[in-house]
Image (cartoon, rainbow, N blue to C red):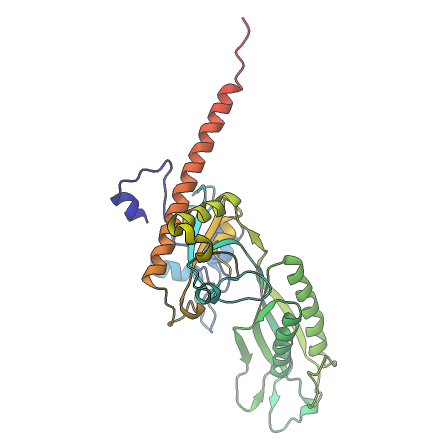
Length: 356
Protein backbone atom coordinates (compact mmCIF):
# COMPACT_ATOMS: atom_id res chain seq x y z
CA UNK A 1 0.00 0.00 0.00
CA UNK A 2 2.74 2.47 0.91
CA UNK A 3 4.53 1.59 -2.34
CA UNK A 4 1.39 2.40 -4.36
CA UNK A 5 0.94 5.72 -2.55
CA UNK A 6 4.53 6.63 -3.35
CA UNK A 7 4.42 5.47 -6.96
CA UNK A 8 1.18 7.32 -7.62
CA UNK A 9 2.50 10.41 -5.83
CA UNK A 10 -0.52 10.52 -3.53
CA UNK A 11 0.03 13.05 -0.76
CA UNK A 12 -1.80 12.46 2.52
CA UNK A 13 -2.62 15.01 5.18
CA UNK A 14 -0.96 12.93 7.88
CA UNK A 15 1.79 10.26 7.88
CA UNK A 16 0.87 6.62 7.24
CA UNK A 17 2.87 3.61 8.37
CA UNK A 18 2.93 -0.16 8.74
CA UNK A 19 3.22 -1.97 12.09
CA UNK A 20 4.44 -5.54 12.50
CA UNK A 21 3.09 -6.57 15.91
CA UNK A 22 4.97 -9.42 17.63
CA UNK A 23 3.25 -12.61 18.83
CA UNK A 24 -0.37 -11.87 17.94
CA UNK A 25 -1.35 -15.55 18.09
CA UNK A 26 0.29 -16.46 21.40
CA UNK A 27 1.20 -19.87 19.99
CA UNK A 28 4.75 -20.27 21.30
CA UNK A 29 4.56 -17.67 24.09
CA UNK A 30 1.09 -18.17 25.57
CA UNK A 31 -0.51 -14.75 25.69
CA UNK A 32 -2.05 -13.54 22.49
CA UNK A 33 -1.61 -10.01 21.07
CA UNK A 34 1.37 -9.42 23.34
CA UNK A 35 3.13 -6.48 21.71
CA UNK A 36 -0.06 -4.53 20.98
CA UNK A 37 -1.09 -5.21 24.58
CA UNK A 38 2.19 -3.78 25.84
CA UNK A 39 1.83 -0.80 23.51
CA UNK A 40 -1.69 -0.13 24.81
CA UNK A 41 -0.54 -0.34 28.42
CA UNK A 42 -2.68 -3.42 29.09
CA UNK A 43 0.12 -6.01 29.43
CA UNK A 44 3.15 -5.12 31.60
CA UNK A 45 6.41 -5.22 29.64
CA UNK A 46 8.06 -7.41 32.27
CA UNK A 47 5.26 -9.96 32.02
CA UNK A 48 5.62 -10.06 28.24
CA UNK A 49 9.37 -10.46 28.42
CA UNK A 50 9.09 -13.26 31.00
CA UNK A 51 6.64 -15.39 29.03
CA UNK A 52 8.09 -18.90 28.74
CA UNK A 53 7.59 -20.96 25.62
CA UNK A 54 5.17 -23.87 25.61
CA UNK A 55 6.10 -27.41 24.63
CA UNK A 56 8.70 -28.01 27.32
CA UNK A 57 11.21 -25.37 26.24
CA UNK A 58 12.81 -22.91 28.66
CA UNK A 59 13.29 -19.84 26.47
CA UNK A 60 11.52 -16.61 27.38
CA UNK A 61 10.23 -14.09 24.91
CA UNK A 62 12.92 -11.61 25.93
CA UNK A 63 15.66 -14.18 25.36
CA UNK A 64 14.34 -14.94 21.89
CA UNK A 65 14.02 -11.27 21.00
CA UNK A 66 17.63 -10.79 22.05
CA UNK A 67 18.73 -13.86 20.07
CA UNK A 68 17.22 -12.63 16.79
CA UNK A 69 18.21 -9.01 17.35
CA UNK A 70 14.69 -7.64 17.79
CA UNK A 71 14.87 -6.41 21.38
CA UNK A 72 14.60 -2.68 20.82
CA UNK A 73 15.56 0.21 23.05
CA UNK A 74 12.65 2.58 22.39
CA UNK A 75 9.84 2.78 24.92
CA UNK A 76 7.02 0.47 23.86
CA UNK A 77 3.87 2.46 24.60
CA UNK A 78 1.11 4.41 22.91
CA UNK A 79 2.54 7.53 24.56
CA UNK A 80 6.03 7.13 23.13
CA UNK A 81 4.83 5.84 19.74
CA UNK A 82 1.39 7.39 19.18
CA UNK A 83 -0.88 6.64 16.23
CA UNK A 84 -4.17 8.31 15.31
CA UNK A 85 -6.04 5.26 13.96
CA UNK A 86 -5.48 1.57 13.24
CA UNK A 87 -6.77 -0.47 10.29
CA UNK A 88 -6.01 -4.19 10.04
CA UNK A 89 -6.40 -6.49 7.05
CA UNK A 90 -6.77 -10.20 7.80
CA UNK A 91 -7.86 -13.45 6.19
CA UNK A 92 -10.85 -15.34 7.58
CA UNK A 93 -10.35 -18.05 10.21
CA UNK A 94 -13.33 -20.05 11.47
CA UNK A 95 -17.07 -20.33 11.85
CA UNK A 96 -18.80 -19.63 15.16
CA UNK A 97 -22.42 -20.01 16.33
CA UNK A 98 -25.13 -17.46 17.07
CA UNK A 99 -23.45 -14.32 15.77
CA UNK A 100 -22.16 -12.93 12.47
CA UNK A 101 -18.75 -14.42 11.98
CA UNK A 102 -15.36 -14.64 10.36
CA UNK A 103 -14.16 -17.52 8.27
CA UNK A 104 -15.59 -19.90 5.67
CA UNK A 105 -18.81 -17.91 5.48
CA UNK A 106 -17.22 -15.33 3.16
CA UNK A 107 -16.00 -18.03 0.81
CA UNK A 108 -19.23 -20.07 0.96
CA UNK A 109 -21.38 -17.09 0.03
CA UNK A 110 -18.94 -15.84 -2.63
CA UNK A 111 -18.45 -12.63 -0.70
CA UNK A 112 -15.22 -10.70 -1.04
CA UNK A 113 -14.93 -8.32 1.92
CA UNK A 114 -15.89 -8.62 5.56
CA UNK A 115 -16.48 -5.28 7.26
CA UNK A 116 -15.55 -6.04 10.86
CA UNK A 117 -17.62 -4.33 13.53
CA UNK A 118 -15.98 -5.91 16.57
CA UNK A 119 -14.37 -8.95 18.20
CA UNK A 120 -15.96 -11.55 20.45
CA UNK A 121 -14.83 -12.04 24.05
CA UNK A 122 -12.50 -14.83 25.06
CA UNK A 123 -10.66 -16.09 28.13
CA UNK A 124 -7.62 -18.41 28.21
CA UNK A 125 -6.93 -20.60 31.21
CA UNK A 126 -4.40 -23.17 32.34
CA UNK A 127 -6.29 -25.81 34.31
CA UNK A 128 -4.27 -28.11 36.61
CA UNK A 129 -5.67 -31.39 37.87
CA UNK A 130 -3.74 -33.10 40.67
CA UNK A 131 -4.15 -36.71 41.74
CA UNK A 132 -1.54 -39.33 42.61
CA UNK A 133 0.93 -41.30 40.52
CA UNK A 134 0.46 -45.05 40.75
CA UNK A 135 1.29 -48.22 38.84
CA UNK A 136 -1.24 -49.27 36.21
CA UNK A 137 -0.88 -52.96 37.01
CA UNK A 138 -0.85 -52.95 40.80
CA UNK A 139 -3.52 -50.30 41.51
CA UNK A 140 -7.17 -51.12 40.80
CA UNK A 141 -9.62 -48.47 39.58
CA UNK A 142 -11.21 -47.86 42.97
CA UNK A 143 -7.85 -46.87 44.51
CA UNK A 144 -6.66 -44.58 41.73
CA UNK A 145 -6.61 -40.80 41.92
CA UNK A 146 -6.41 -40.50 38.14
CA UNK A 147 -5.69 -36.92 37.07
CA UNK A 148 -5.84 -37.79 33.37
CA UNK A 149 -9.26 -39.41 33.63
CA UNK A 150 -10.61 -36.40 35.53
CA UNK A 151 -9.11 -33.99 33.00
CA UNK A 152 -10.65 -35.96 30.13
CA UNK A 153 -14.08 -35.69 31.74
CA UNK A 154 -13.57 -31.93 32.23
CA UNK A 155 -12.60 -31.38 28.60
CA UNK A 156 -15.62 -33.34 27.35
CA UNK A 157 -17.91 -31.47 29.75
CA UNK A 158 -16.53 -28.09 28.64
CA UNK A 159 -17.57 -28.93 25.07
CA UNK A 160 -21.07 -29.97 26.12
CA UNK A 161 -21.64 -27.01 28.43
CA UNK A 162 -20.30 -24.49 25.90
CA UNK A 163 -22.70 -25.94 23.33
CA UNK A 164 -25.65 -25.41 25.68
CA UNK A 165 -24.52 -21.80 26.32
CA UNK A 166 -23.99 -21.02 22.60
CA UNK A 167 -20.29 -20.51 23.33
CA UNK A 168 -17.06 -22.13 22.21
CA UNK A 169 -14.65 -24.15 24.39
CA UNK A 170 -11.39 -25.67 23.19
CA UNK A 171 -8.30 -27.37 24.58
CA UNK A 172 -5.10 -27.09 22.55
CA UNK A 173 -2.38 -27.99 25.06
CA UNK A 174 -2.30 -31.07 27.28
CA UNK A 175 0.71 -32.07 29.38
CA UNK A 176 0.90 -34.78 32.02
CA UNK A 177 3.41 -36.21 34.44
CA UNK A 178 5.23 -38.44 34.98
CA UNK A 179 4.56 -39.47 31.36
CA UNK A 180 5.04 -43.22 31.50
CA UNK A 181 2.98 -45.93 29.80
CA UNK A 182 2.60 -47.96 32.98
CA UNK A 183 1.99 -45.05 35.35
CA UNK A 184 -1.33 -43.37 36.08
CA UNK A 185 -0.66 -39.62 35.74
CA UNK A 186 -0.62 -37.70 38.99
CA UNK A 187 -0.67 -34.21 37.45
CA UNK A 188 -2.27 -32.87 34.27
CA UNK A 189 -2.16 -29.35 32.87
CA UNK A 190 -4.48 -28.41 30.02
CA UNK A 191 -5.37 -25.18 28.29
CA UNK A 192 -8.97 -24.01 28.13
CA UNK A 193 -10.06 -21.37 25.62
CA UNK A 194 -13.68 -20.16 25.95
CA UNK A 195 -15.35 -17.60 23.65
CA UNK A 196 -18.63 -15.79 23.04
CA UNK A 197 -19.81 -12.55 21.51
CA UNK A 198 -21.23 -11.34 24.85
CA UNK A 199 -19.17 -10.82 28.01
CA UNK A 200 -22.00 -11.77 30.38
CA UNK A 201 -22.75 -14.98 28.52
CA UNK A 202 -19.09 -15.96 28.63
CA UNK A 203 -18.85 -15.32 32.37
CA UNK A 204 -21.93 -17.46 33.01
CA UNK A 205 -20.20 -20.31 31.19
CA UNK A 206 -17.01 -19.80 33.18
CA UNK A 207 -18.81 -19.79 36.52
CA UNK A 208 -20.65 -23.00 35.66
CA UNK A 209 -17.49 -24.70 34.40
CA UNK A 210 -15.63 -23.90 37.60
CA UNK A 211 -18.42 -25.33 39.74
CA UNK A 212 -18.72 -28.43 37.58
CA UNK A 213 -14.96 -29.07 37.36
CA UNK A 214 -14.88 -29.15 41.17
CA UNK A 215 -17.63 -31.80 41.12
CA UNK A 216 -15.76 -33.84 38.50
CA UNK A 217 -12.55 -33.69 40.55
CA UNK A 218 -14.49 -35.00 43.57
CA UNK A 219 -16.02 -37.82 41.46
CA UNK A 220 -19.53 -36.50 42.03
CA UNK A 221 -22.21 -37.52 39.55
CA UNK A 222 -22.55 -35.01 36.72
CA UNK A 223 -24.71 -36.07 33.82
CA UNK A 224 -23.45 -39.34 32.38
CA UNK A 225 -19.74 -38.72 32.91
CA UNK A 226 -19.36 -41.48 35.53
CA UNK A 227 -21.69 -44.01 33.92
CA UNK A 228 -20.17 -47.35 33.01
CA UNK A 229 -16.97 -46.69 34.92
CA UNK A 230 -15.49 -47.25 38.39
CA UNK A 231 -15.42 -44.39 40.88
CA UNK A 232 -11.92 -43.85 42.20
CA UNK A 233 -10.38 -41.43 44.67
CA UNK A 234 -10.68 -37.67 44.45
CA UNK A 235 -8.46 -35.19 42.64
CA UNK A 236 -8.12 -31.43 43.00
CA UNK A 237 -8.42 -28.76 40.29
CA UNK A 238 -6.88 -25.28 39.99
CA UNK A 239 -7.47 -22.50 37.43
CA UNK A 240 -4.99 -19.83 36.28
CA UNK A 241 -6.24 -17.04 34.02
CA UNK A 242 -3.66 -16.51 31.28
CA UNK A 243 -5.32 -14.05 28.91
CA UNK A 244 -8.70 -12.34 29.23
CA UNK A 245 -10.18 -10.24 26.43
CA UNK A 246 -13.61 -8.65 26.62
CA UNK A 247 -15.90 -8.17 23.63
CA UNK A 248 -14.86 -5.18 21.50
CA UNK A 249 -16.85 -2.77 19.34
CA UNK A 250 -14.86 -0.91 16.71
CA UNK A 251 -15.01 2.78 15.88
CA UNK A 252 -18.02 3.84 13.76
CA UNK A 253 -16.00 6.29 11.65
CA UNK A 254 -13.40 3.62 10.82
CA UNK A 255 -16.12 1.11 9.98
CA UNK A 256 -17.77 3.65 7.69
CA UNK A 257 -14.47 4.31 5.94
CA UNK A 258 -14.12 0.58 5.23
CA UNK A 259 -17.72 0.32 4.02
CA UNK A 260 -17.37 3.27 1.66
CA UNK A 261 -14.07 1.99 0.33
CA UNK A 262 -15.72 -1.35 -0.47
CA UNK A 263 -18.59 0.48 -2.19
CA UNK A 264 -16.12 2.28 -4.41
CA UNK A 265 -14.44 -1.00 -5.32
CA UNK A 266 -17.54 -3.08 -6.03
CA UNK A 267 -20.03 -0.42 -7.18
CA UNK A 268 -23.61 -1.68 -7.51
CA UNK A 269 -22.54 -5.15 -6.34
CA UNK A 270 -21.15 -4.05 -3.01
CA UNK A 271 -24.14 -5.30 -1.00
CA UNK A 272 -23.74 -8.78 -2.49
CA UNK A 273 -19.96 -8.85 -2.11
CA UNK A 274 -19.54 -7.43 1.41
CA UNK A 275 -20.81 -8.44 4.81
CA UNK A 276 -20.81 -6.95 8.29
CA UNK A 277 -19.00 -9.32 10.63
CA UNK A 278 -17.87 -9.95 14.20
CA UNK A 279 -14.41 -11.51 14.46
CA UNK A 280 -14.31 -14.87 16.17
CA UNK A 281 -10.58 -14.58 16.86
CA UNK A 282 -8.55 -12.03 18.77
CA UNK A 283 -6.41 -9.55 16.84
CA UNK A 284 -4.02 -6.72 17.66
CA UNK A 285 -6.89 -4.39 16.82
CA UNK A 286 -8.47 -5.46 20.11
CA UNK A 287 -5.77 -3.60 22.04
CA UNK A 288 -5.32 -0.70 19.62
CA UNK A 289 -9.08 -0.03 19.87
CA UNK A 290 -8.58 0.78 23.55
CA UNK A 291 -6.38 3.75 22.61
CA UNK A 292 -7.30 4.86 19.07
CA UNK A 293 -10.14 4.50 16.52
CA UNK A 294 -9.84 1.05 14.96
CA UNK A 295 -11.46 -1.30 12.48
CA UNK A 296 -10.64 -4.42 10.46
CA UNK A 297 -11.12 -5.87 6.99
CA UNK A 298 -11.51 -9.59 6.25
CA UNK A 299 -10.90 -11.36 2.97
CA UNK A 300 -11.85 -15.01 2.31
CA UNK A 301 -9.39 -17.88 2.45
CA UNK A 302 -9.87 -21.32 1.00
CA UNK A 303 -12.06 -23.50 3.23
CA UNK A 304 -11.75 -20.89 5.99
CA UNK A 305 -8.35 -22.32 6.94
CA UNK A 306 -5.63 -20.00 8.26
CA UNK A 307 -2.40 -20.35 10.28
CA UNK A 308 -1.95 -23.70 8.62
CA UNK A 309 0.22 -24.99 5.75
CA UNK A 310 -3.00 -25.30 3.71
CA UNK A 311 -3.78 -21.59 4.11
CA UNK A 312 -4.49 -19.90 0.79
CA UNK A 313 -5.94 -16.55 -0.24
CA UNK A 314 -6.21 -15.91 -3.98
CA UNK A 315 -4.27 -13.03 -5.55
CA UNK A 316 -7.59 -11.43 -6.47
CA UNK A 317 -8.86 -11.52 -2.89
CA UNK A 318 -5.52 -10.23 -1.58
CA UNK A 319 -5.76 -7.32 -4.03
CA UNK A 320 -9.36 -6.59 -3.03
CA UNK A 321 -8.39 -6.44 0.62
CA UNK A 322 -5.39 -4.20 -0.03
CA UNK A 323 -7.51 -1.88 -2.16
CA UNK A 324 -10.18 -1.55 0.52
CA UNK A 325 -7.51 -1.02 3.17
CA UNK A 326 -5.88 1.80 1.23
CA UNK A 327 -9.22 3.42 0.44
CA UNK A 328 -10.30 3.25 4.09
CA UNK A 329 -7.07 4.84 5.29
CA UNK A 330 -7.24 7.64 2.72
CA UNK A 331 -10.83 8.35 3.73
CA UNK A 332 -9.92 8.48 7.40
CA UNK A 333 -7.00 10.77 6.56
CA UNK A 334 -9.41 13.19 4.84
CA UNK A 335 -11.93 12.93 7.67
CA UNK A 336 -9.26 13.73 10.24
CA UNK A 337 -8.05 16.73 8.26
CA UNK A 338 -11.60 18.00 7.79
CA UNK A 339 -12.32 17.80 11.50
CA UNK A 340 -9.06 19.55 12.31
CA UNK A 341 -10.06 22.41 10.01
CA UNK A 342 -13.53 22.60 11.52
CA UNK A 343 -12.13 22.68 15.02
CA UNK A 344 -9.72 25.41 13.98
CA UNK A 345 -12.51 27.50 12.47
CA UNK A 346 -14.63 26.95 15.54
CA UNK A 347 -11.81 28.10 17.77
CA UNK A 348 -11.40 31.26 15.69
CA UNK A 349 -15.13 31.99 15.84
CA UNK A 350 -15.12 31.62 19.61
CA UNK A 351 -12.36 34.20 20.11
CA UNK A 352 -13.82 37.35 21.71
CA UNK A 353 -11.98 40.56 20.99
CA UNK A 354 -11.21 42.60 24.10
CA UNK A 355 -13.34 45.72 24.46
CA UNK A 356 -11.60 49.06 24.00
